[in-house]
Image (cartoon, rainbow, N blue to C red; front, side, top):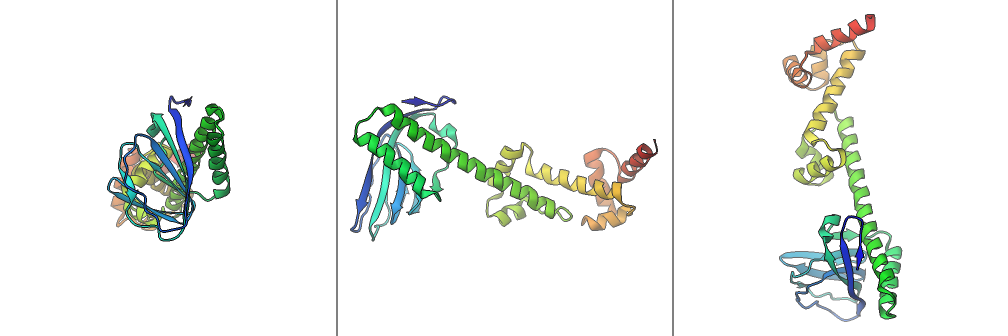
Length: 257
């Protein structure tokens, strides 16, 4: 057993490498271990509970314990994959996704090969479990980086379109996510609700016009895609407890002082 810093405990059970050149179907089973399957050749059609997954070369999936899984369709051509079973305590808290598309397949094949070699040669389990845990943590780091990149891409998309700020559902549609999922990811990354972030950026955009131009409030309202200047004033006062004119005058007074 290996214990990670956050208290997660992982215990390796067994693993192997499956290869079949004839049509193949995974029988339906229910087991008490977690299982990782990493496809190295062909396509597997797996059902876990009521959900179906089509897995191709380079795909990795975590199967939960005590949930029935098997094939919902025959794999017609040859198929090869690693399977690794382990027990856990608190594994869900790592926040790993269900499935991964592995782009650096060489390194992951090499890691699975090393773990399998250690298992078959009955070497000390501590090194084996360290490699297994390291692989899981690397997956977590990769998905965190992907989420961070997505959040910064969203922030940049808002910045580019802030003169006519998009609604949350429009942002979600642009990035091919659901509104709820996107909002949760954004909050986790920036610790501010997505709707509040859009309003904050729109306010800053209005303030830049007020502080650097002589445009009238009506002109700024048009540039910022408000239907009329009263709506801009209402928006501005709601977020700053002052009017655009008062804000501009305060800047002018500060400059004089």
